[in-house]
Length: 253
Image (tube, rainbow, N blue to C red):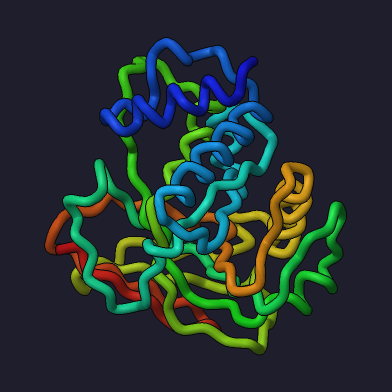
């Protein structure tokens, strides 16, 4: 597998709007998908973007069961797509966009370890906040689902919204999130019922990044999995209340 050639092919096809070329279906493995994603990230950085953080994918047992894959791939978050709570985001910028309530971990210290401990991670995290991930179902010429290509594409990541938070972190597994759209409740979930332990997810992310020559830098934001996913449309105002952490809101215009 020529990782550089595949990266260049995906970069070129993505510029033309084909993020999942039919010719690449079935050709990539999981690790190759991660390497290609990093190659695409480096091209974005060379074009003037900045890295703002990471996401941990497949932290929901339900999501892993649906895909049939027991890994936790990373996805990168661009700094220019990190919004503060209350932001207005142009819905037309995203293709088949969705909004997911996710906790946002702000790192005050860099983590670069092959096997980080929970104590190391707790010491490195300066704040845990209510948050949203904004993601999209990007188009492609492939007619069948290919998980490594999804990994290469960054796990559907588009941006995040960071809301209120706290430096006094309690039992995150017990946090209940209530999500509403335009004043109407749409979902209510407790973390332990739908997601892996957040510190375990962060540890797996840091170890995977270390293996691929990357790390969580001081100042990075990290999201650790969706409580649920909702499609959005222009005119929506989404609000999520995280018990003990605060709230986050975003308007799609």
